[in-house]
Image (cartoon, rainbow, N blue to C red; front, side):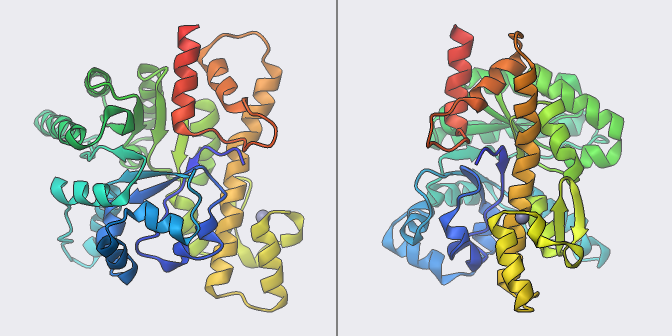
Length: 357
Ligand SMILES: [Zn+2]
């Protein structure tokens, strides 16, 4: 299935991700693991894997996880930040959860992941000049530390910043380190601060990082998914939101979340909806099976949103040698019998081939 989503896979803390049907992950060719998920988990499974000296990915593969699905390791810093800013703060509780770089890198090493995101600092629109300077210096230092243990072709550099100068500074730095995979961070605080400014900065980031693979962390609303992919031309999008939607019993119809009890599952032919229909007949609307089936539908639906339009567009366009066209061609290249999705690695290789031509 062609997908440009990188969903979070909470296989450390939620056992359902280590069981069927999620363990046989077939919805995307890359999923996100977070160091935060590793540390918050108290699963014996992790202890067992570590005792045998295997990586978490090897442990997952033993359980049936497809070898060719890439694992991208991230800090999970945003989840921690969100917790701090959310209900904990409302209750007056200071969240004492901070991961040191040593802890993050320890989790990274154990993960056996294919890609590693540099630990970053979220730059907020109201940060002072000094704060931005300090955060940029910290991001650079974190990157250099990560590069001591991981080769640059497996590192994803996070672009932060609410001003062109900051974005350029970080981009130039990552480029000088030989890093080819980039991701935009800090999107949600920016979006909440000012829509127009958010839009300008996101476009600017895409423009500056032209020719580089650019992922975006933080999807504030599902309706922004086609916008990120088709208008802003981000290469892939974080989809943690789909998990939260599913937990809240919301079912996606296109970009619109609907209460699942109002939906006719027969109007969609995905595997999730087949399961949902069976559960509905059995009147089993609340178990983990129901959540799993709903999440499958939401992932499949979001994948459709991110691919349909790009296919139509690439059919319409015939002669345009723009970045967009090169990019599209990378996505529509497929041999019969192969999955529509191409991996991040393949995409980068393709982009560089295109560049050399
Ligand atoms: Zn469905």
